[in-house]
Image (tube, rainbow, N blue to C red; front, side, top):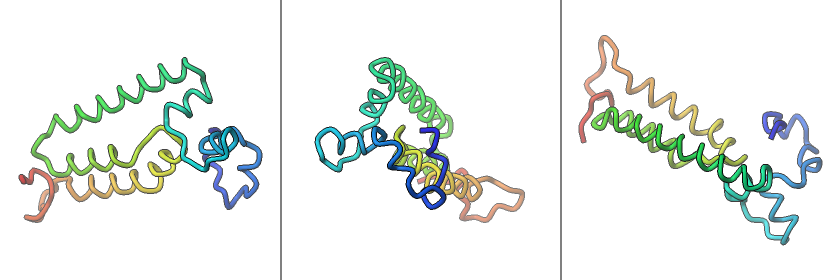
Length: 130
C-alpha cells in the first residue's frame, strides 16, 4: 500500500515485488484473475482485526457522506457530489486509483460549478430543484 503512490511508468517492475497485494491475492491462491473485495483485502493485510475496524471506518465514512447529503436535500450539486463518491469509491487499491483519477477531479468540478457566486448564471446547480 505504501508504494501505491509510485506510478507504474516510473517503477515498471513494482508489481513483481508485491505478489500478495490487491487482486494478485486471488490469482496467487486459486489462479482466478478476479478483483479483491474490500473486506478480503482488509483480511489479507490485517486479519480479522482489519475487517472489523476497516468496515467500521468504511461505515462511518458513508454515514458522514449521507449526513452531508441530508444537510442540503434540495441542492443538486450536493446530490451529484454524493452520487459521484458513493458510486466510484471503495477502500481497495482500485478504489483509491478511481478516487484520485476520477472522483476527486469530478467532485471539485461539480463543487466549483455549483458554488454560488455574486453573479451566478440562472442555470447554476446551487439551489436547483428537480
